[in-house]
Image (cartoon, rainbow, N blue to C red):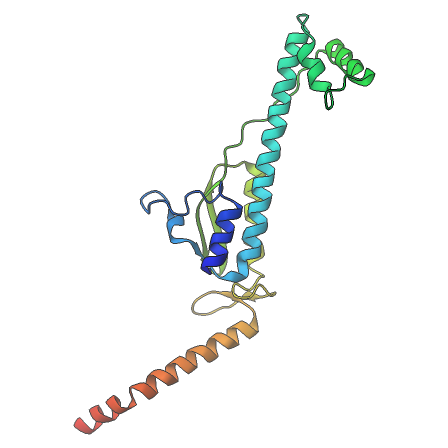
Length: 209
């Protein structure tokens, strides 16, 4: 992947790619994004959904813990924290006080979701024509996001992001036909240039024999 896109992803998702320039002894992210620019959008949307999910679940967990602490204090006579919890922009409304009394009457604590560890990418690369996103942290939901992103890569050109399919025979890649044709034309051109450059040497060797 181009350096500018590499840097863009690292800047946009610093928590996920915090090991981008870490030692090769600890992470494979030191090698960068080992895939084509065509999958940039897939990686970008994947990381956006991952970080968005983590941030939301952490806020939700903090909110439920705060409520449970406030309710616990309210049940022994101190309503101040629960009132503050239901207060919006410093205004204690009748509705807020009603909610406080309802919570105390119900005495129902909220189920607190498990803590989600921050996702940190360990390697992002192409393998057998598909995207591989290796990481640590996260939860089952994030695991599903990664599987979905990887499946999308099998129908997306790694070079230009157009609809594509896997090639069969030889090195497996996922590319659209125009990019395949362009690659073959480039290879043939490079071969012709190489042969032309060394033609004199070939002729000299043939005469020597």
